[in-house]
Length: 99
Image 1 (cartoon, rainbow, N blue to C red):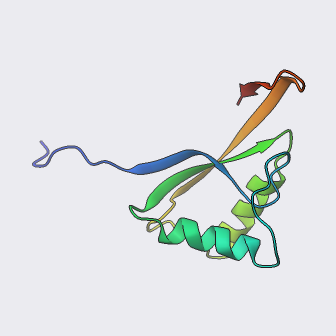
Image 2: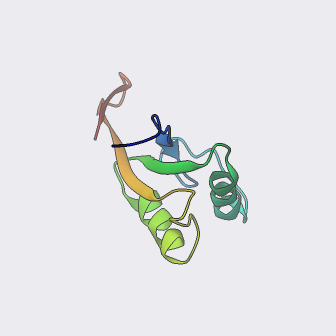
């Protein structure tokens, strides 16, 4: 039996990364460093992110490469990095299918 109450953990289920197709909010030569540093220093700590992009997995794959190189350490923050795609059903109607 547990002797404590619920533990709340911060997850960010929809977060764009540098280079996101149709929604790139980052620029400059330090965009990836700045982005990863912001995630690592967030308070409360982010324990899971879903890297959002449209049609492609490029930004998710870059997050995984950086994670494998030691960024976003598993001992908090960011134990989990998951892909999240928005697929416009009709590009003119802005209706999205999320996966």
